[in-house]
Length: 166
Figure 1 (tube, rainbow, N blue to C red):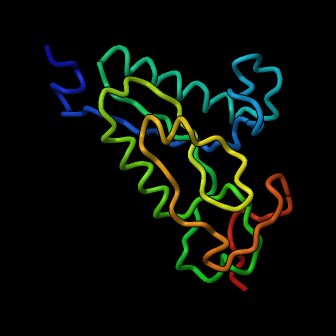
Figure 2: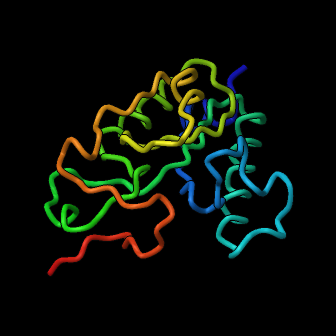
């Protein structure tokens, strides 16, 4: 018997993007803080992200969907010269790698429900991508330094999120 989503909308797979910074994820902890307590949330933003992921999980269970929640960093347009005027966080991701992660998430067979972190490649990558590689076959291919970008510190709050146009 086909599920509601399959019958009415022909939906078989879903990918939901969630900014990994919303969870204040530490690179040495296996799971985000909210599994322990919402009291550590600095803003309401991670709480909404958590509830969105919970809704995705419920939809996967109720309708037999394959749902991958991708936790992603800042995507970088490698063709935009404005980005080269600032330092990059080591985990930021080139658009081609992000698009590949989405493509792989949508075609992953029988995934059920998963939350998977994907980041870009850099000489200072500290993020564990083994789950993304194992479940999706994801491996970043665009190392930001190879395109002339300077890396800043992963937690440097003074790094701007958008390039300056001046």
